[in-house]
Length: 636
Image (cartoon, rainbow, N blue to C red):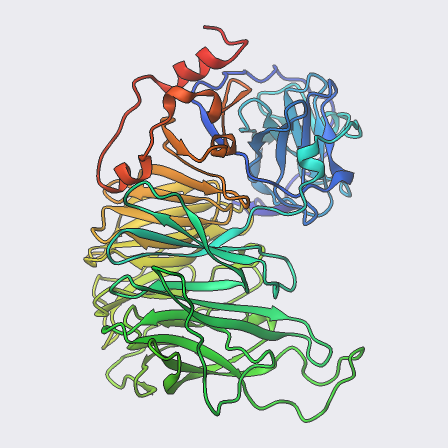
């Protein structure tokens, strides 16, 4: 989808009319730094797959009009995950910004020499320039220029808008088997947790869909951060996960899930579970609520879990159906207010030893309308405090269910809207995040960020700060976490149009940003190591990334496939992997692709444990040199 946005708008912009104005060909600088390309599956819409004229390359998009990707036809390897882009049109009177979403009507076209690839809305011929990528580097070519004669042309290229649209886009061929058999995208990671002893990382994997997600196809995996034990599937056949938490003694793991489901009587309902396992043997304790009205699925959806300070109770914000409409509705009809099935949300305390609910206090109200399908409740790490978003942030003592009378409300009420979705099923419009000692809470309305005293609401770090780097950016806050000491606040932001993310690190005492790192994927979850030296993030692309917290630099990336193969790799090419896990990573250099499995000298057993322990292993050979030596047609 091509979206137009005006910046520095003149009184009257000239009409975008493309005619044949030729400029010099784009300069191909060539790619000199290896780029990691994770080889996880991508769903493909076969009807919109476009081949290059020589048949060597194929550009695909999924059935939701997302995940534009370039592949090598012969090997079936992913070459470039084409980034979404905002492409500017420069004109004498001002600028217009055009953004490639992409959307349901976008198609791809290759240049005659196969070096460049364009995407544009097939239903539009007059407005909005196509986005053009360099096939070798994956970089966007631009900007477009609109001169005084209304000539729309690509800066630095010998093409006009019309000429790009004339590129052949109907070339067809046979899809590689790996693409033809790919039915689903890699599961996203909405939640992660690190044990208090620093030995385990729990990762929740969820297959996010555009519509109903009430399918038991999700799982939890555990990575060992100390020693050489490989990652393993801890639990499977779960509903859509929203929260994971280890007990403070690292012996228990709790999980919450909440998804919407479509029924005959109601348009949408919530289904979900609160689950509890003993970590060592993975034995599950069945949870129960006696004499309580529960959801239609006889389960308890929730969005948060935490453990009491003594580890004897699992705490969750349990959703139970409130007063139902009086009128019944036939399965094939919609009647009444079917978008808002009401729910009572209560803080529920489960006894870890028996699984029984020992206490329950009111937390707030919710309903199953689409507008409310976002997180509205946040628990503190000890489960003793909560913030409820009920038109404004309300701090609550979960033991009593009472609002804190000492808290002075602040002026950051989140306003959910139609432009706050970063990806399918991932919404960003604000949060509340407690520090480990529950003395501070970071709050955001989506655009602004503030740190306040958790008891009084008074600002502890000065005035609120804006998240956008410039006024026209559409960055929204997604989630946040304090370091164990409380000295650092990590915040992830994302933007709807580009589908990319940023990690921002702040000095919590002054709310001063000291590091910002870009990511090609929306970063959906955060967890610090106990010493605060490293930060783990879960991504929409199914990868876990590790960052050092002094400068915000990427340390390593963790990837695990549905089949259980896994790889850990660093930006300079070191890796550790399962037997076939090295095939999950390829490096792209100068338009050529080589798998990590073809670089055995870069393998380092126990890499993850070394990194978490504070070691800084280095390769004895530069990655560029190793790739050049392994490529059959390199210039070595």
